[in-house]
Structures are given as structure tokens and as C-alpha cells.
Length: 244
Ligand SMILES: C[S@@+](CC[C@H](N)C(=O)[O-])C[C@H]1O[C@@H](n2cnc3c(N)ncnc32)[C@H](O)[C@@H]1O
Image 1 (cartoon, helix red, strand yellow):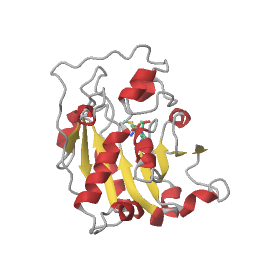
Image 2 (cartoon, rainbow, N blue to C red):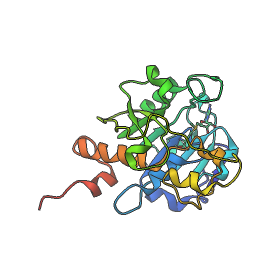
Image 3 (cartoon, protein in one colour):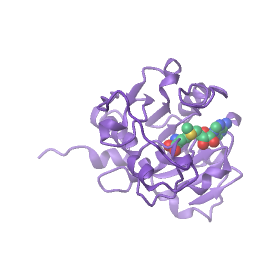
């Protein structure tokens, strides 16, 4: 993991990164989406991921290149520098303004900003993620549920995509409780219900915001399945079924 705090990347520190296709993770957090992007693909290669987040504390959990930057000020310079290599943009704008959980609703709705940034970058694939309470602010969102992937966490999340996608069904009981224990503790079970390694360096508190990698994998599978001839990424080329 490399941390860049002024929004630019020096040539030397990351020079070996740039012969790989890139994904950009806006509002990167502790890196759930990053872990999904890195591990996507039959060959297990995924993308190199540049994550951008205003909160430097998230860098300690982040498995990609972490750029500390406030996105309300626009995109950092690094995005321009590597624009041609960016194949996927993921954007998880903060959800506090629309949350249904125990937190009081607060903060600004940054979904329109996230959408503008995706459209400004204009990659082959972009995805906006948010919570069910933000439904009215997303265009034709689809909903995923952890139970569709056999995960022990429900985590309903909505996705607005630049490509055709469909939601997943829920297969959990009406009442679905779990206890996460000490929010600062390294809770191995809570990591595993997200489909992460029990050794992933994430506390329960950090995990609360994390998107299970299975959600990212499913969306990218859908992109490749439904639009293989519209746009082709280095990875979709790997996945496109070959005629026998
Ligand atoms: C929902 S979390 C992201 C979760 C992440 N996608 C994951 O899967 O782990 C939203 C993040 O947005 C960041 N954030 C909030 N306002 C921001 C801003 N103006 N610029 C950049 N990041 C911001 C927060 O620090 C937080 O880490």
C-alpha cells in the first residue's frame, strides 16, 4: 500500500504500477470495493486500484494506492496523469445523508458530484454505490443483498451503473440479527461474513462501511455478460467466452 497525500504520484514510487489496467475507487474508505476490484477475474489479477478519500485514517486499511484528497475540490492530478489506463470507476459517496441505521442522518448528498466525476472521467465502466435510503437520488438503481451470495451479512446496497445490470434476490428471514461486538476489535467472524479473509486487517468499525467484494464481482460479471461487444476492457477480453 502506498499513500500519497498531496494528490500527485511521483514517478519513482509507483513506476511499476503503470503497465497494468487501472480502476479508480472514489470515496475509497477502508477498501471493500478495492478488494473486489483487485481480486476480480478468473486469473485472480483484477486491476491495480487508486483509491481517493478525504480521510487519511482510512489509508491504514487500504490495500491499493491511497490518495488523500477532498473530492468536492474536483479530481486530483493523478487522475489526469493516468486517465488513459482507467477502465473502471467505482464511487461510494457517503451515505450518512440517507442512512436508515442508528446514525442520525447528516452530511451532504454527494451522489450528484460522484456521477459528475464518473462522467468527466468517462471510463468504459462506472458504478455508483449507496444505501437503500438514497434510492430517489440514483438513476434506475439495482439492489444487491449479501444473502444472494451466501454471505452472513445482509447489507442491502444500491448500484447505478453505466451498463445494463439487474439486482439479486434476498433469501434471508424477515428478522436478521447479528452482533458485531467491540467495534474496535479485530472481529474475525465479521470479516468472514463479508467474504473477506479472517486475517484482513479491518476492525469491526472499519467493516461497517465496507462493500463485500462479491458485489463488485457480480456487477463486473454482469457487465461482461451483457455488454461484451460495447466496450472491452483488458479483463473483459479474458472473460469473453470463446467459440468451441
Ligand atoms: C461509504 S464510505 C466508502 C466505502 C468503500 N466503498 C468500501 O467499500 O469500503 C464513504 C467514504 O467517503 C469518504 N468521503 C466523505 N467525503 C469525502 C470527500 N469530500 N472527498 C473524498 N472522500 C470523502 C469518507 O471518508 C468515507 O471513507
